[in-house]
Amino acid sequence: MRTAIYPGSFDPLTNGHLDVIERAAKLFDRVIVAVAKSDSKNPLFTLEERVELVQGAVRRMKNVSADSFDGLLVDYVKKCKAKAVVRGLRAVSDFEFEFQLALMNRKLNDQFETIFMMPKDTYTFLSSRIVKEIARLGGDVRAFVPVHVRRELGRKLKETAA
Image (cartoon, one colour):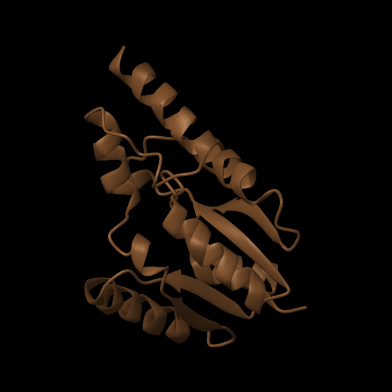
């Protein structure tokens, strides 16, 4: 079984992330969306909430599941016996950073490949950070995130504002 890991903080999951997940699901027997603990990024959502948001978005995809991990990605990949790591690229600026990560991961464990995937052009400008900022300022994020994520984002922002 060819397993791929799609790691990220997913704070929150966007339609761009979903697009990459759907594309990866066509290429691999199994895709694990691995939500990184990422405390250093000071996430809006807890790790458990981010995993639940991903699970809600992928529940109809038969070969996709959500999980969380803490520590080195290479260790998680080994634990899952994955053959590939999927990384989304929105722009050239993403490539330089992702390329360095891929080379470092290869140095730490050369038993898997990093696959770079681009989302549809309609999502190339999209990031979780931008979505959170639009939502914080009262903007409409319906075109950028799944319905359940939009609801939870609104709830969470009200919670943090109180």
